[in-house]
Image 1 (tube, rainbow, N blue to C red):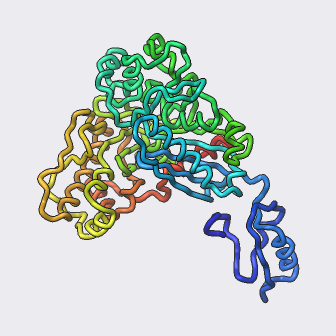
Image 2 (tube, helix red, strand yellow; image 1 turned 90 degrees about the horizontal axis):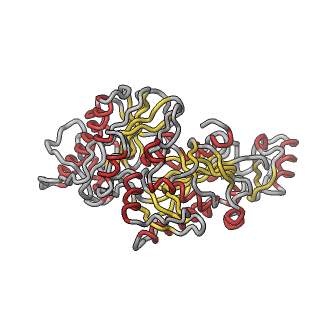
Image 3 (cartoon, rainbow, N blue to C red; image 1 turned 30 degrees about the vertical axis):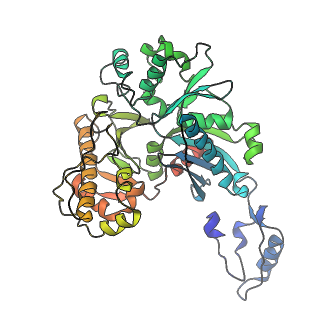
Length: 487
């Protein structure tokens, strides 16, 4: 019971339970049987018998907070309590899909599957929910029916046809002047004539659409997801730029942009009935998956960074200075009074998964000396195109020459990804970001000790695995913030 629910510490034995945590509670669903132990006082024993005649209990006023992460390879959920302790976790793979509309359908099934996975005893106490999604993944949705009109176009989809027009509109070096930006996707749809003239369409980021499924409230996004759409999150601006307001596509822009963790709508009555989430449960402003992973690490000082090494690689550095430079794929997310400066690369674990099994990765990594240079120079990608630290939609993968031994090949790939990470942080420093002091790492790469040591050597700073590695935990912290006012 303690392991499953992760309640605050309580003394439990075959013969007794400490009731100091159970007084004044109401039932939630698990029976206890108590026998007197020799060391148990009679009064405590009588209390135990009375309490155990019902079920294991939590306070009726207990509030829980749910974070849902939609990453590149699957969806995860974490439920935490007021003390930030994890009570339940779940994950869902995206079902096989054939076409864009089926992709959206698979996200919807994963969303409601994750809600169903939460034990009903916890689900009925969820006070708020926050969702993160992959940055710059977007779609057009008809507000009246919820029908997907266009997309989804994924985070790495480059709309090169729209880029010249976006560069004409936006200032030089603006975050949106990258072919994979959300604005390029929107202009692409505008050029194709798929935006209806009736005004019943809305651009939604992945996290926005999933929240829309829960609330039936459209037109709301957060300023982290809206960054690559052109939104300026600076406190003195906090708006879409004037150069966007008179464009034909402006009619489908989000009408409300909130800070991540801001509650803005309750879960709709039909969804409450369907899922068992309580009426009044608030949906809060979400964020991107890499920002959620950063929040999960619990960092707060300039110079601290998080690199998420999952299917792809995303890194964020806490900086006192904002840096936006589309030419090299750098952008800044607002974090209270500081900035999270960084970018996202297409290199990462997806390349490794295409070449090695999990067993091979583990066994071969143990044979590599992380303090020795491989002598190989690769640029590992699954397909052409890179976003950061080189912003080139036509950049070709480079995985040759391949050594005869698999261990040498893996050594070269791991080392090359580490050099790409180092180049990324070097570019941030050149543009004026705070000096890198330490890196916390999340994602699948955080479990590879050899790679961590190798990266520390190449980066020249300590690299350690984050204590909390799940982006869904960071999203849960945002949900908690929506009720408590603080992360």
